[in-house]
Image (cartoon, rainbow, N blue to C red; front, side, top):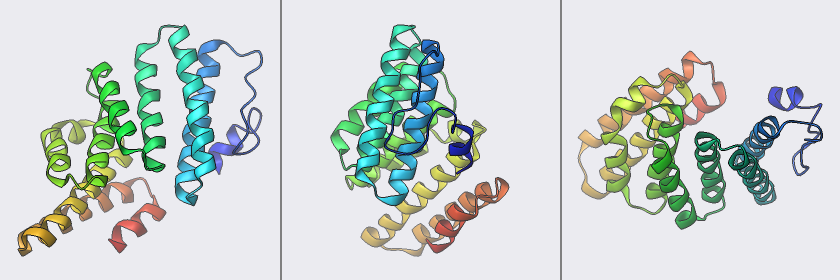
Length: 206
């Protein structure tokens, strides 16, 4: 809601294209990407498929702008967000391709690469490729430990916990459940630090 208020001058509501008239290409691209991400996030929360389609169009347009100014890193970053839109819609194969392509451009360790890796693991989780998903997360544990985005850190620990629960079901044993609880607690700790009550409630429910 606060983000929408900040953008009120350029964007009135979900489903509408923001007003980019008179803006420099780089600024227009950032605005389109930001509105696209917000539309996707809100649409994902409300299970709104039309919002995801709108988000995809906005993010795709932002990619065109970023490409026109030769900003390779922002193109890759936008593709990560576009991949999440496809995942929300159930396009697992499309999302996997986009996350993989984005990672080829994101050689520098950081929040964006971490988000892309998380997305790729999420796609594998959705496809019931639990071991592949856990491998991605475990092999990049150092990256997730070093990033400064606590929301990404929380999502990382939460997904590991979800995977460990699946192994507990299929392979049995309390060790997996104990590890899962530990991961949930780490996720909750990260969210507590940023006072994200909504997502903490989800973690505690899990």
